[in-house]
Image (cartoon, rainbow, N blue to C red):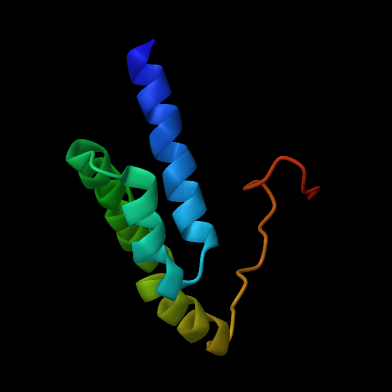
Amino acid sequence: MKKLRQWQRFKEIVGSVLERASAERAAYLEQACGQDPELRAEVESLLSAHREADGLSEGPWRDASAELAAQPQVIAPCEPGVNPKIRQ
């Protein structure tokens, strides 16, 4: 039960940090984590993972999708017998 409460507290703090402007985050972390270095370390670890994951979702895929969208798309003709729903 203690682990569940800890995890809920981590999620609460991380969510609150992410809702705040960048300039307000450090002060909020200081206030929310107080003198608990383990809590602070875990919250900072989760925030770091969030930043890295966010960068992955926006980084190389955005560039690749723009490049693909600029290329003409070629669709191969359907051949009878390849797809049973196409009549000969």
